[in-house]
Amino acid sequence: MKKRILAMVLAGMMAFSMAACGSSGGDDKGSTAQDSGSADDANADGGAADGDADADGNAADDGDAADDGADAGGSDDTAPATDMNIAMITDSGDITDQSFNQTTYETSKAWAEANNVPFTYYKPDSDSDEARSASVDQAVAGGANVLMMPGYMFAAAVVEKAKLYPDVKFVALDVGAGDLLEKGVGEGYDYNPDNYDVKEYYNSDNVYCCTYQEELSGYMAGYAAVKLGYKHLGFLGGMSVPAVTRFGYGYLQGADAAAKELGIEGDVEVEYVCGGQFYGDADITAAMDTWYGTKGVEVVFACGGGIFTSAVEAAVKADGKVIGVDSDQSGIIDASKEGLTVTSAMKGLATTVDTVLTDIQAGKWSDYAGKIDNLGMVSENPEENFVQLPIETTQWGDGFKEDDYRALVKSMFSGEITVSNDITALPETAIKVTDYGSIK
Image (cartoon, rainbow, N blue to C red; front, top):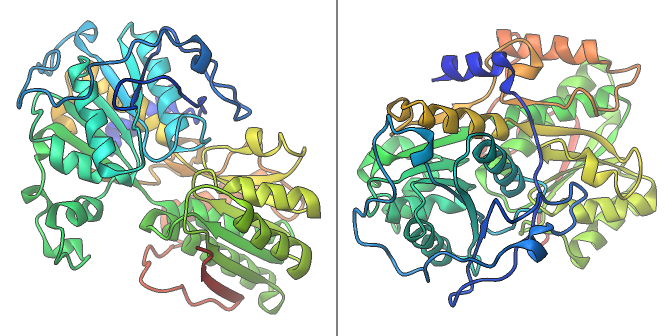
């Protein structure tokens, strides 16, 4: 699978794009369905999508579950593109989160338009497993036969609904075996996926899942920050879920490695905290005000959906810096103040969406069904990997230039540099790390 994806990436499909966000209007359950032909792209600056005003208001059926095994528009793997009907469902956020929802929305919509395929997105009426599952019912009732589901929160919907709709292809992005087992096993799950056969707990024949090696791009971001001269770093996570933790622990390892290379281990320190939610608010901003204003933190890696807004608000007041996550967030972060973003620790979500949809169209679903891929590095060339820093917008300096970054990636790909993905405990470091737990 990775060879096929690499081939497509080499063909020029690696594009970390951002999409716009926000939706309004809904059916009697409060869920929103918007047609891509009527909703304009959202603003890159994080403003509400034009589609909020322009959408034609045509919602899918009222969300009642379709009959088990219903034909959602064709299940033939070799079906032509006109038989595909794509629906994207948001998780706890919306399509303006400058993260997974937004990227999945924009990339799916752009692919559908380029291939003359119907596309709709749905926003659940609440942040719950039940609401997300209801949106699956709504999408299938509306004719969707390919579901794009970004984020670990969709594990419950996959476990519950994939068996009900065997003719629908479920593409669960950033959903891993542990997420599926937590929902499938329920009470008694020991949180060790190796102790279970995950396929016993969901209908794997019509599901493709993938996760990303966040620790690798987190490492790159921490390494870059210290090499660029920052000595007092911060990490602001959303909730302490595995993906966020891998980003954070990779960040610590990268900062530690750079400090050791420079011989300044005693001069570098990191403040580490999670907000307990995936959005910023007054309490989290107050904590960041203390970091930047009182503790002297110079740069914060804000990792977790919209929580970056609190780091940005505090950084602007104290002339601090921010590191983005998932996609190149410089556009939205720098809208608050030019030059605010040092870099972004990115995942190749857009590439994954493009590749999977193209292969479904080509009749290659069998190459994906039942797999849970862990995507990371596939090349010594940074642009071809599923984890990377943005070359165009990273603030390169004398201590860390683009050539240095390319050399770092080459060393990581060759195995000369290794990064642990163990999240059972904070990594051991020579630099000082203060873990504050969770703000909420």
